[in-house]
Length: 228
Image 1: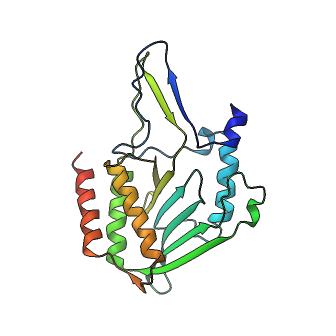
Image 2: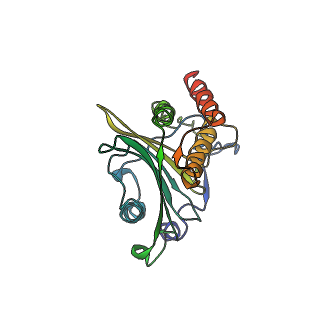
């Protein structure tokens, strides 16, 4: 199994059945809450090695404590990350989007992988709104519920991992993640908003300011999250 993990770490779905019982598996990830981000002592050795490579290459020109981070780890396409940074010299906020030209995963020449960077000034009120959304979602991080003996457990290793981070004054960095959330769930809406932020950063706009449609989308999702 360890050898297979090294070849395709995120490209399989395991279904484990405890004793006997009907297979009625539910996915661990992809509901209405983010999952906790596991620490270095909670993940496999190959993951520690891989994540260290991603950090060295993809995060090389990014601040250690961004105001907000949306980090995407796909299975079959290049890794990428969006940061919101506050520049204290000119008192402005910036979107910084970095995407690898090739995948770092399983790449013997990972240290030479080139990274494309997009940088865009962003309106302060837009930053305040998106930080409110990310903070609300992260504050509701939940571990998956324990299952009874005899039920099926679906462990999803394929798909894309989405990591959300905010830097809260007095608390430091707080994070949550979800893997390939199902359509229609709150976490799918959260991922969609994160992807829209990336598109704004890659656009020709001089300054990013959320339009009415995106602003309404964010506000409605905040209300949905707070309704739990």
